[in-house]
Image (cartoon, rainbow, N blue to C red; front, side, top):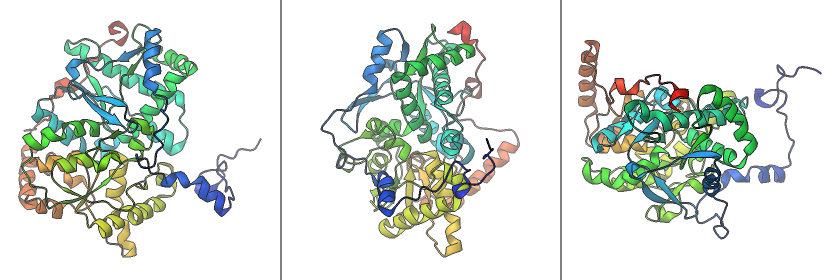
Length: 447
């Protein structure tokens, strides 16, 4: 058998990728899902889908799994999902499942979130004992598999379950809050696979047993998979009433909702009748509305940002062309937006970091791209450099900040002075670094 690993296929993906030679009609049918509008106007809500949580409770009743439950201490707020199902979003005692892309590319994203929690008196744990979800590898290269994704999912959520023990609490004290849309979508899919497949549960149980990541011989699955934007959604009115200091009424905002949030396991995405008539997912948009900004629609709202995982690696020019032509250009021309906010690491990175390429084709449609929580932090008086960290963004944010009544030059000068203090060892922390460091408790003994 010949080795095709070094041969070229379509777009350099390898010999196993070959042109399908579809007719125009076949190609149209094959890609029609790209234009699918996942909202209440277009989804058939007549027949109830299967709610995977019903099976999860049954598995726990049968002694197969342990469900990491949301308790009264988590101060959950109930929201509606696409099909009108109830989802509980915990607002307190949270375990931060951070994003590799945020920490590496958009550090003002997680710091803005923690800044809010500090000011609102939310108890949380931002420890170091967490791994990447590895979904980037799975979607981008195809060399991962469901067993490895499931093992990582269960490993991280086991850590969330037992993390309170080193601080004197019982198992389940801290509930996981997922920062990244990719992790969020991946974990929701994996939760379904685990609950539906006894074979998969048995395979990963062997792996987790070797790692000491079982509790009473069982795997731990969270009651809900919760995204940070859902936390921000349920806290938005409190944020606006207690913390907002900037009048946002003259700021034109467009929103890009991440595919991995509301198109992937769509039944779990949050919808709210007070946000866009309940027809589109509420997160992101709801925060801008609560802050009093002008939320402006545009024709390509449903489009992907262009990231796409695999082609960002091998066909990057497609990603750049798509993000510029289908998102940035449209939002600028149609909505005349001051800013586009997103809810996911990959989306914001793609739309933020690729605008420079448009200049090569006389497409000067630059626009600030930041997360919903970053915009909210600015509206609530967070430092544009120390907390929101706009200096990490490739898209220009100066005009947005100035339009909000914040002096960019003054904030920059203050940050430069702060850096001098850091050089002298006078470092400020959002979170106690001693609490962040895992104390290497013995998982087998503590299970």
